[in-house]
Length: 262
Image 1: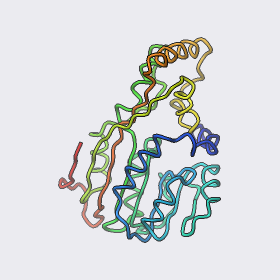
Image 2: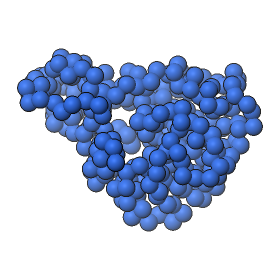
Image 3: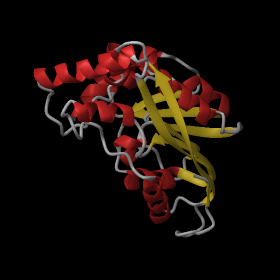
Image 4: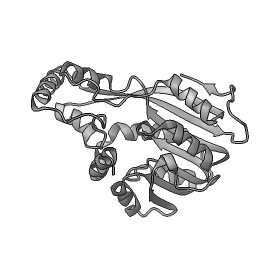
């Protein structure tokens, strides 16, 4: 189990109560999905927070997450027609052409996206609906600035630029009647502790290659955040890229006819 898996497994019990902005983003993505599908895959499903809504869209739902703790909680929900599978979404544990709805909310940023998109194309049927949301460049800039002032640069994972995502989509054959759009989601916090816990308690933490924060660095960061707290400026911004629409598998990549709205 790698560091990211360990963090998310540790955060499994607290995820549902802490993931406030994550739920808002998922709700916006779910609102874009029509009903009437037969088999939906939830990629990076966590503790199953989106299972009930996805079950309204599809007869069968398979949730896939790399954390056994997360899938254990998801399985315990006992929702008819829904199963939770522990697995890597870079190697989706589903057969070719098995899904007509592919959903993922705030999971792909942890993955090698070219691999995930190829897997999405593999398990999708022709004209499957894809609904994906993940943070891109411009996310958590407020926290990044506070960390920089405390001498803690490069503590946040690198988020892709939207133009990079367009190229990956083209290279991996994700094309069809697909729309890309960006939206900023913000969450305000009343205390420095809640501000940091909103990241740590859901398992996100800092970039996995970083060393632990020293006591002095943490003290400097805490002082900076306390000043922002006094100014009511404790904010997280998630600049989120939404990819929604019908995937055409029978067309060979690249297809310049994709519709992009950014």
